[in-house]
Every structure is written in structure tokens, then in C-alpha cells.
Amino acid sequence: MNISRDQKIMKCEEFFSSLSSILDETHEVIRSCNQDLSQYLIPKGTISELSYYSKPAKSFRISDHWNWYSSLKKCSNPRYIQCLSVDIPRADRRTDYGKATKPKQGIQVSVIGGDGKYHAVYGEVYDRKTKTWNWLETEPADIAEMIQ
Image 1 (tube, rainbow, N blue to C red):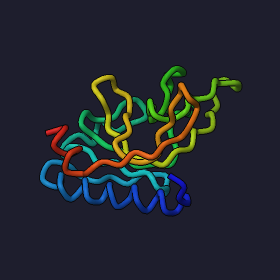
Image 2 (tube, rainbow, N blue to C red; image 1 turned 60 degrees about the vertical axis):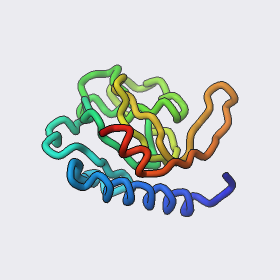
Image 3 (cartoon, one colour; image 1 turned 135 degrees about the horizontal axis):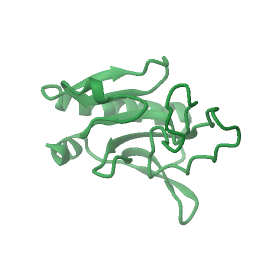
Image 4 (tube, helix red, strand yellow; image 1 turned 90 degrees about the horizontal axis):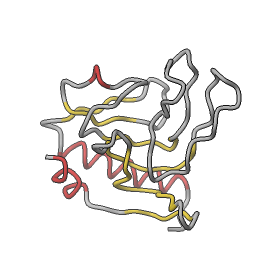
């Protein structure tokens, strides 16, 4: 899909907003502490599971950055990849032990799967086999039904 970054963000925000409305009885929206695009849609009562070490089951994230290693000051597990999306290019290797790596860019809404990784449900997706970007569109109601 050949649209601008701003249009991609707008489309993902609209999808996330619709999904949030559909799931408003069971989920709550949590904004990122970093004052960026990122937001989480998590089951009510699971905020303690939202950390540098884990994300709640049946939760969603909208963001434009994924797949990085945080500094060891924020996450002491040197192998834990932050916001690991299987539909975004792989995280860079750490070259300066203890320091964060740069996140990979990609605008999408993803859900935590049973494997503890994010899987895109809407937005930009990277095909690692063909090394190309594609655009995924789904219906918020279909995605909400998938997790209930």
C-alpha cells in the first residue's frame, strides 16, 4: 500500500480506537510512558503484567517501533527483546553490552500470541522471506471475537 506515514498512523489509530470501543467492557487503554504513538489495550486488572519483562495475555499494542533490546538498567535480562513482533524485521544484535539497540520501524497494531510475541492484526507487516513490506487490513470486530 503506497500511502504516507501519517496516513498509515491515522489508519492504525482508527483501527485501534474501534477495537478499544468494542472491547471496552473487558479491556482498558494504557498510554506509553514515553509520550509516543504507542498505546496498549490490556485486559482490565492486568496492568501489573505490563512491564519490560512481559505483556498481558490477550493484549494489543499500537506502535511505530518494535524489536529492540532495552538498556540493562531498564531490563536486566540481556536476551529479552522488547515488543517482539514476528511481523517486523529482527532486532539488531547488541554491540555495546548494556546499552539499548535501535528499534525497528513499522506501523502496526498487534496482539500478544500464546508464544508471548506480538502478531500483527492491522498495518505494516514485513515478509522476512521476500524482504518486502505489505499492508494488512482486518475488521476490528473480527479481531475482538478472536480473543474472547
